Image (tube, rainbow, N blue to C red):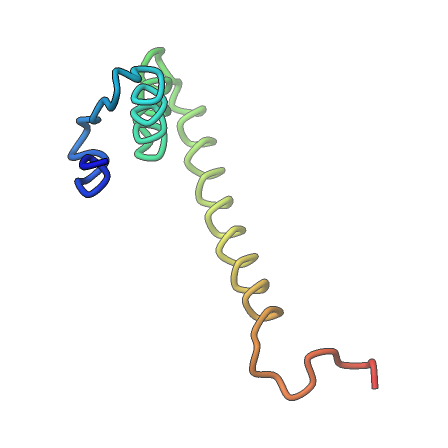
Length: 90
C-alpha cells in the first residue's frame, strides 16, 4: 500500500510490487510505446530508403493535420454554451 503514494515510475525505472513481474513489464512496455521508443527501434532496425522516409514523414504530417482538424470540429460540435444546442429541431 505504501508504494501507491510514490511515483509509479521514475524516468524509465518501474517499481515491481509483490513480485508481480508481468504487471511491471506491461507498465514498462506501455511507457516505452507512449514515448515512441518501439516505433523508433522498428524504423532504425532496417535501412529505410529516402523515398520511404519522405513518404512516411509526409504521411505523419497529413495525419497530424487531420487529427487536429477533427478534434477542433468535434470540440466545436460538443461545446456547451450554445443558445440552441440542436438547431433545426424547433
